[in-house]
Image (cartoon, rainbow, N blue to C red):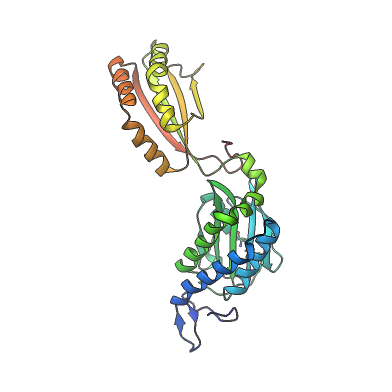
Length: 300
Ligand code: SME
């Protein structure tokens, strides 16, 4: 077992008892940490207590850290949550620093040398490397787990995988309530991590009404069956008057591909495609896949 007072090697491995570097122990260490956190959180639903104990377990189990803790999503900002280490900056805008970058991208950010990361926010001047893993539940950003080390290149892919597995376990089973309560405001406000398919269709002048009737009669039902309710279905009132727009919401690209494949295999949808093709009202279509800005999640 690795002790907290053991050092990490420059390449992200730990120094074992004989003084040489070992990588295998990292996997065992994260398994041990996961079990420890599981035990600490089971039976307790208070968010602050659970995040605090999780931060303490991480800080005292992983070697060579000078800071470990959570920032929680509050609208367009991350706000300091339970942590271990020196006092830290309280508010970080989504998109700023390592934490805000991980929050904006919705993916982990591993920084071997914080001095080489543009915009790094130095809370503790001793920090030399950093790993930030976002906490995401059902497509909603809840916050981030932030680990700092005074050693260069302290973290590697095994740490990233280990921490991602840890935070994933927060989002399932008994620990899921931890995240519900960590960001109730956000859960009610909406989702940032979703894909909006914004589709603009152009019809031949004078055929808008006929195209809409055709769609309503044959296309609407099979499309809703597979894609769910559209976010909006809009006809241009003024401007490019021969266009209409519809927007569909997906969890991610894989969800979109699966739903569209199922729709494509539906004979009712194929009937609509055939009819609209024969009618010839449509002359152009284009689509953009978009995500909500972090300060304005979509509520659905
Ligand atoms: N370094 C972080 C700020 C948080 S502290 O490290 C605790 C960042 O750049 O976002």
